[in-house]
Length: 113
Length: 116
Figure (cartoon, rainbow over the protein chains, first blue to last red):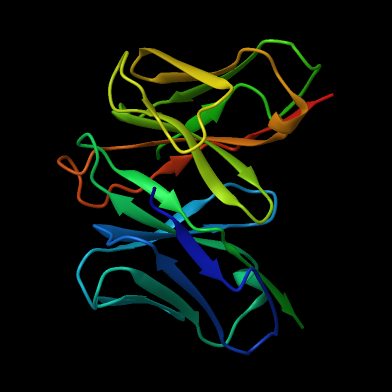
């Protein structure tokens, strides 16, 4: 079945440093979504990318979808303590008319002052 | 705002017990999902449902069953709980792609189940 791997599993940064997490799928994806889970919370949707090579920005966050639609990345510029949490990518496949997602293993980000 | 609620935040059960986890969403979403979350493994899909009385197996359905008798409610059942089912269980719902292109999933707060 479809597998989605994420690296790194953990990342500790100093506040102000940049951060990147990478996501790789074993199969071509129809779309990729990114979620953030704060400590003790539940995953919350950040963004969806659909097109090959697509790049989207949300303030300090930049999301990319690879040309082959098998990989993606999330880059945070100048991290802040509010960025702490686990970031998940989720690859979409069209099955049964729905939106089954295969979640990556997640990258846990810790930001130190 | 979409609201997804789960019946319990914390649950402790004994090996062999039958366990019911309930999930309710209030936004008339057609799709509902059950995941389990374990450290280092991310979210793994147990079962999902695209419509009332319809269910499909996810990646790790063994030891679980589901029920969807009403559109807003999706139940996860552990027929005979085992210690390896100790985990965080997350329910989610979404609209199908034909209705909304941004078919993001909305998650409930989770149920942390401990099986002794």
